[in-house]
Length: 270
Ligand SMILES: C[S@@+](CC[C@H](N)C(=O)[O-])C[C@H]1O[C@@H](n2cnc3c(N)ncnc32)[C@H](O)[C@@H]1O
Image 1 (cartoon, rainbow, N blue to C red):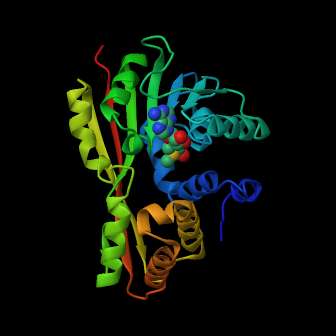
Image 2 (tube, rainbow, N blue to C red):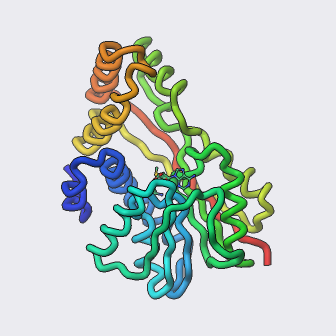
């Protein structure tokens, strides 16, 4: 079951699969993500920009730590911004602002923020280096740029049989995001000209029969794929068969699945 304080929020967003999946992602990686915020050494009064903030889960965590500093969350989806603003209001967090903007072209002055932050964004934008350049532009000289991205999602799995391998290949070939963004970050931040680049890597490990929370996560994931089942699987029957293959794997006693979560930071030269 969902165990932490987000339980009531989760029930509230019954109809919104994407928000529910992001809330669950936060639950499943809670300690890792809190550790990332600790590493950023956020001090009260700092101003922060959260690129691709989604429903504002990361924005609110940043805001609690930066208070009375302001945290500015932007997302390309208006619905995400609306959700982020409404949850923040309900939770009584006032040092946040949200706006609909494209992360590769933000309407913000140069050298504005002490910290610019992007979690699970770069892997799904067509031109990640353009987003990084925008992050650099709006960060103050000496300020911190912090990127969190996973690496190897759904690709380090054992034991694999032919059907499972085939299913994973279909998913990977139709994957809109770069599942290996984590390993690219050091090179990308170096090319950007950042100094004092730090790389921290955590392992997300899932073993044995999946927990109820993990089953819920994968149920949401496949619900989100279902509307495009024709395009990816060539029909609903094949999609249902393949989903069954994945859910059978989730029940296995000897199942092992892992991926890495990278937190890479660097400073804008003074
Ligand atoms: C996986 S979610 C991560 C949300 C949040 N950062 C978190 O960690 O909880 C990625 C978000 O990036 C947003 N996004 C994708 N492309 C974007 C772009 N070009 N500019 C701004 N936001 C974008 C999506 O709408 C989505 O809300």
